[in-house]
Length: 182
Image: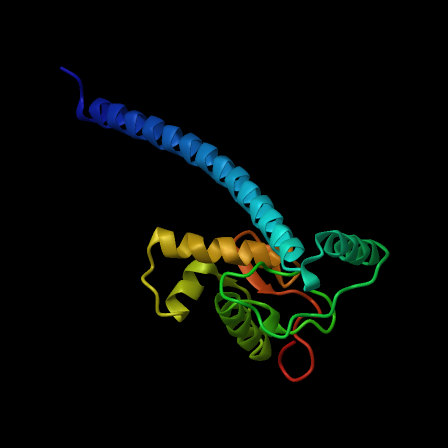
């Protein structure tokens, strides 16, 4: 007859194996999600470009292609487009640059920046996504926390936020300008 400790060790080992298997599956799904998001982004860009070509003034698609190529060449030469006045819901996150206002972001991203700007203004440290979830009055469930983490990571990759420690976010240097915000 096995001992109680032996039975506990067996159950612990089985649980550990299950956790490891689920983590591997989660990593695989995360990688697949990243690939699918990239593909979706490429198709969205393609659709927008086709829409721009088809809606060219006068219906001259050859002229629209020339205008788009000239615009692309200007951007490659270092000429930057003017920052958008306001963002549409579900818009892409632009790369931060001096003078780009928070209004270039959708409301969810602006809300993240606002709460972190308040923390900087008050001299408080970085926030975790779980803490942001509580501040936003959302249910602290993995789906909500991960959705915020995804947005925060996107803001980090575009230069709006910094991640001084894993999972802790604050405004990137230069984003919080005079007057408490960009």
